[in-house]
Image (cartoon, rainbow, N blue to C red):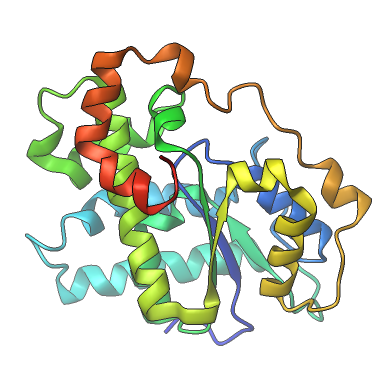
Length: 254
């Protein structure tokens, strides 16, 4: 098990899905989310750890982690947690982190930390496919999709990765984590920030709290919402639907 401290709130999603906004809202709610952060609010203590382990973990169904690898994985994450928490005041109990790729190892984190809460941020897979941010596809596409990635155009590969990762996380969260899992649709947050932030606050345990002006000010709907309508041609959209249609429907993107 990871070290016995109050379990964190972890924020994850595929790259560019709006996790930065959610992280700032969580911070305004009084949570420590780290000091060593990049401009996107990513907790840098977890970046190298995820670089080392996500691809190996993604291949576990065809090559299970050995006992030694399991041990190293746990040590690596425990060390990341300790570094992340080191600047946090000793009496500060509300904490967590945002590194979007935590979504790739959600099952592992929850296995070793059953009290963990996870905020799953999701954005329309068609917009994600048309984004210039394809770092996750570049780093992890081959490990997650394997032979399925071969021959796919980048936008279609991106949509396929989006579908796989979000469906896996959604299914696991709904069936295994119960009230410790929350899915936040980025579009809903932008359209109705007050109700979406209120839902986040309830999830964090602040039942009677209302969104503050600081929280509301963090939500600024970008012009890129719906960009797929302009950037994707009919052939590309048909290919995206072929690999991600079920996931788009599942998450309400129809």
